[in-house]
Image (tube, rainbow, N blue to C red; front, side):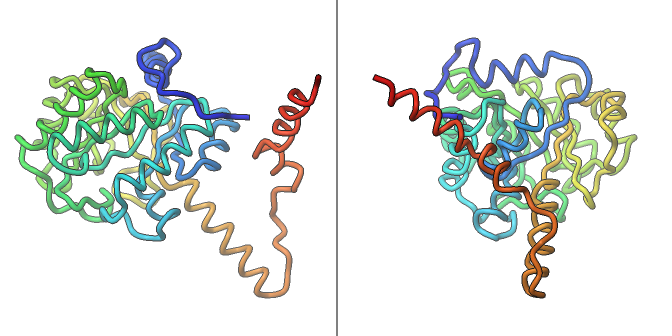
Length: 297
């Protein structure tokens, strides 16, 4: 059974330290993205080494609203605390634009660290932001984009400890050259991970990793603007992480709609997780064993 743990600070067993260890390895890590504590636990129990709390998926699952900046940082933190307390694997937070000016960015990163996250993503979209594969038209200027990343790095170094993933959406808004310039500048400021959103083909993906040294993440969104490639090919191109932001949400929605259609037709859904397995996933047996330990004289 998983229990809440205090903010780990700089100890070697902290979530940021575990993430750094993973990133120091070889190949491309497959990172399914979660949207609540249950999806995060299923990711962990399936053997994956890390996860990412997708803002798109959280906005959908928690509010049934589009990823257009409607969800608040308070709601994201509340969801994030539950996620981080449910698993031991490192989880990266979607910090969106940092939720304001550089002072807001610093506080947001600090709060995500206190919630238990191993890393935080900060992007350069203009607020309100939107999903990067639904037509980003505007990013902030270079000065503001750099200030956001600098503030995030400062929060990390001041004690938050969380790794900083710097994301640019400039490919859609201003073109590839500007996007690559920004990624290089983010790396110079001390960002730990780099994320070019929505490259259009393998050539752009390869150029990004080749031209800008650092740890790169690829966003594998089914039906999005970027080609979905197998992890082995992503590793060849130079990527260290392959994120799957909507895979679990999409299959969950498909399964629930199928089940509801069956119930509407008077039929029990044929594909269900049995009750005994649900008990194990949620920790009922571990809970009972815990109480037995305290029952002994």
